[in-house]
Amino acid sequence: MPETIEIIQNKTFLNDTLKGLKSKPKTLSSKYFYNKRGDELFQQIMKLDEYYLTDAEYSIFESQKDNILKAFSPNGEDFNLVEFGAGDGYKTKVLLQHFVSEEALFDYIPIDISQHALDGLAQSLAQTIPELSITPMQGDYFQVLDRLSHSSTRRNVILFLGSNIGNFSFDQAQNFLSKIREDINTGDQLLIGVDLKKDPTKILAAYNDSKGVTAAFNMNLLNRINEELGGNFNLEDFQHYPFYNPVTGECKSAIMSLKDQEVLVGEEIIAFKKWETMQTEISKKYSTDEIQELAEKCGFEVRYNLEDQNGYFVDSIWSAV
Image (tube, rainbow, N blue to C red; front, side, top):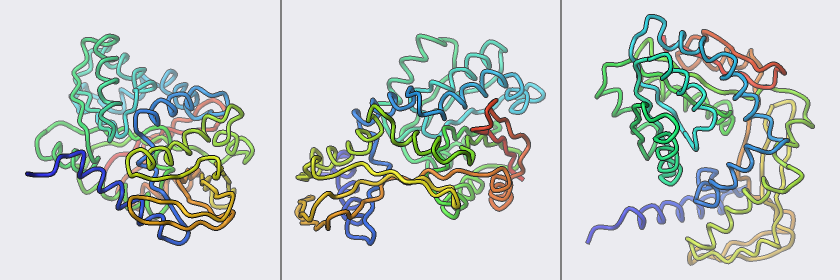
């Protein structure tokens, strides 16, 4: 009998986890944060006082929604609005509601690795914006984008919000965005949310909030390994550990072992030294010069940089050239 999708996904999860835990230094992939509990915790994170990113980008959309629509469709052209990592669509709904009210001709295509998140988004939008044309797609960004580029003659406008690009190093971001450019046509557009360099204490607080929600989100990855891969991590023997380098702009989250210990993952034993870390996430912050450099290296032209009133965050609109 053919393997089910769930079995294949668990094998991929296990292989990725073991590969990361056997590397030096140890790593765990951030793409596995988002099971049902992970989705719930991330929604809580976005509402935290310390997590300024959500409010900053939301305020940009509220104040610039008309200009954003004009950038996407200057002459009333129809377009596909393709969102990578849509989540619950909290910020995107500002644009969707405005676009629908202005009778823009577009189809909203949210893409997410989490089917749970897509189902929740589709149900929510059916209630709040019933007129919206929506086609949710679960899976890998590039596979879905490749299908769209071969099946539609509309302009594709891609949303990559929430500083998700910061989850890559500069070189990784360049590779990621260059792949996007390969899958779209000249004139297609990308709106990319980017967290700007700023006071380091402001940045670090966003990844180490006073309520411990970010820590729970990070540590939930160990719970998921225990539940789905037969792991036996004792969470009391590990600690959430974020740190920020203002020179590189990289804010990293890690899980630190508090003692010498051995942990079972699948059928393998992984040894940890006291104070050894597993890096789980990177969140790189950019200057506007770095944004310009990144766009040019990946085959795009920066058309607009829309900042919030505090200068914390920018939504940069690029055109494929």
